[in-house]
Length: 524
Image 1 (cartoon, one colour):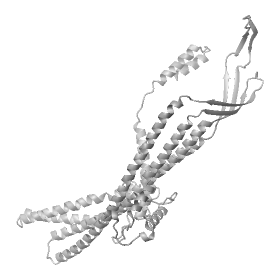
Image 2: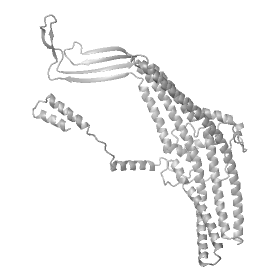
Image 3: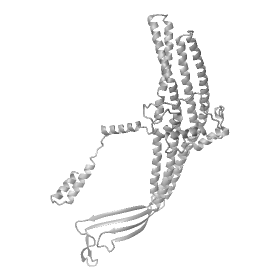
Image 4: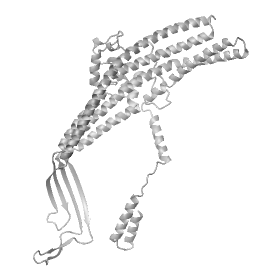
């Protein structure tokens, strides 16, 4: 900038601007460009970004209107989970890139306008070839200042073919993004089911755990007083105190495991950290998932529907189209152009004219590059084939493991339920004995702790069963949410998910559904 001011000052003082001055100004400008240095973000910029992100995270687009059930939790996770939003934006980006690829198929239309000026005329002389003497006086055919403009259309046939192939690849990339979004939705629903049932367990037993912890603390204070005052032989109250400490340790372990369940669920639903919300606590007598599927059909369905395999299929199509693009590059380029031109030079006979041309060119070196490119494409295709086989084997293993885990999770839930019912009866009997002073406080506290642990074990087994059900459903490639869910509110989406899960679940006929426990052959 100082160099420009210097040049303008010379012109104002009437001094001629020599070529050396222009050269010096140009050199100064180039040197100033080399003086640019990296500058770290200042504190204000970082603080502004932090505040902006915090406000965006803290904003709830659809506020909570009541207790949240499982299907509303799923709907909020699908709609507002930040990872899900990233996948949604990636799909939108892929669509926009496809739109850009569409425009590359159109011919180029360029409008140009220009001005050319100089301080003297562009003149010339003629010379005789025979005598070497000047043939004519110096003459000019151009004005000092000339304006010009044109509107030209050009179309490269080879570029059109390559752009068409790239557009087809962009369309396949849209489908890759859609499959990635579908894969994330399946995993998200799977995680939400487990987190919801853990949070329900916390809603049920955390108040009881707190009450039990207070009871244990009071009993410990009592035993410490007995030991301190030596009201009994030391060994008896010390053993009593040790048992109470073991119970307290178990109670506080359960509290630690369950106290963060709602925070984890809130994060999956996209709620701000620290949000307070209530859950719909279902009865423990609700129906458990029932699956009766043939393993061979499950394997076939998994190989057909898993988004990971579909993603590789689309990548194979993209790779095959890349081979077509390489073959197209072997052909010569044919460029057609048509345009209207204007030139303000008054010496021209026609200042407006129409121009058309055709030009062919061929890069001879492309013949030598093509074999190397084709080998790279073949290598990529072979890699995708091997990757598909490896992933297919992994998916079939997931189907077998998922079926086995589902059957075992159902058995574990039945065992936990029987244990919880038995423990409930024991607590009731122990309480009756305590009321008649036929047992001590330690026994009652221990059984209450065992009762809370049995409830937690039952809820944990139910969460494991729901997770195993979602895992099995994901392993066979079933949709986690309905396909048509665009522009739905949370309430509408929750209803759609409820109908989808309760009415369809796995893809199977009515005769394949059974209300009786069934172990698939793979789990036997």
